[in-house]
Length: 73
Image 1 (tube, rainbow, N blue to C red):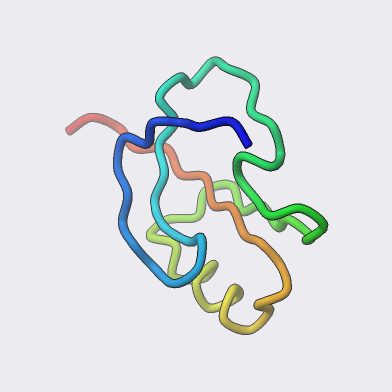
Image 2 (image 1 turned 180 degrees about the vertical axis):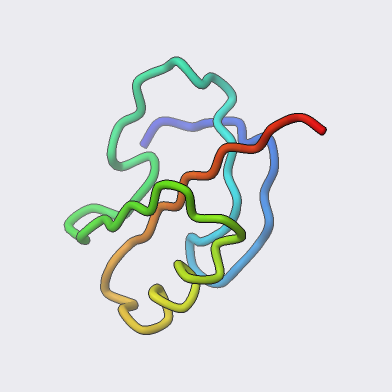
């Protein structure tokens, strides 16, 4: 697994949490963002992530990735 330097981490159970990559333009490898052999569900425009947290609790055998764009104030 390639080590990354996260910018902001909000601890949650398991591998969940907020993660901002150190380099937005580097191609990511799947194993950097999810566990091997597990289905990955992606939610573009996930808001505060509450929907994904509920889905992750309901389907613990899957990994979930939410993407949200934040605009500077």
